[in-house]
Image 1: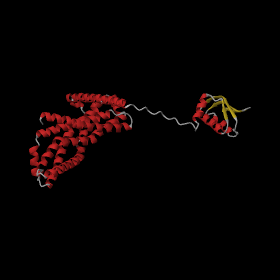
Image 2 (image 1 turned 135 degrees about the horizontal axis):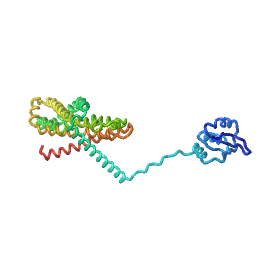
Image 3 (image 1 turned 135 degrees about the vertical axis):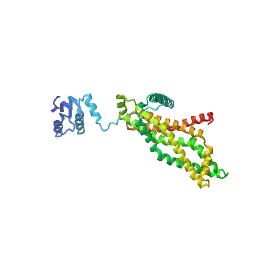
Image 4 (image 1 turned 180 degrees about the vertical axis):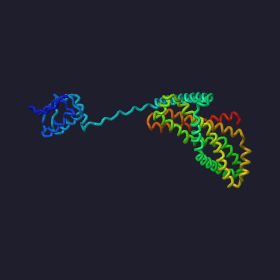
Length: 358
């Protein structure tokens, strides 16, 4: 590194050496004893210049000195310190045309659909392996997920089902009473809860509770590289993480749906007592209308809903990107996808039941 010197010449001063932080301190201190107004400063002998050197030259310029013979690098650093220079503005992103946006969305949807099909195939293969060799399933984790998904959800399922039964019975009894048909509220309540509302309301509650929890838990493990560590040690995420949750969802949702139906009917029976219909009459009317076919049809729906809730929650969790915000995005997408698929599944099963005569 060349030593920095400030020497007087005929027309003013000349800087010789490197304008760097390590060498500039004594020259900078000495320069403040000089009146730089209209003085020429020759920089033709300056070698390297860093940020500190540029700041020194900027101060000389502000003091009235006229800088001469700057090299390109020094001029660039000095220009960057100019307060009159406009801030760099990042170019605006070009907005795609609507047809281009539709194309991007379609391509993303097709890729997402293909990934879901792949996930379903892997889950079916893992389930087949577990059926052949049951010891491959993590039974302790399966029971823990059953507790989290099923037993811990009983309070919220009970509250919502009770309110649903009360509201449904009350809203239907008022108009039917005008025709003396309030007795048939039990028929309406039994069929709607057993065939449709019991499984559907239970699935919607579990979508926000367990489906979101599956996505957030697995997504956090992926962000923290825990899933990569499992793969490195030879554990398959499908067996280790997904299958216990999947089976817990399929097993627990029908049981919760039965509980929901019972609590909903209890709420409806309490309301009908207020309309002068005894409990015995209510249950007699209910049992004459609801048969085993209605019950097993509702249970089949509940099992299908449980599969949707658990599989989509795990799928979105495994597809989480990087960063904390990715976990939130995966959870949101999981809940939205589950709700949409629940409606689609319900519609498909309704058509199938109609053609089967159920």
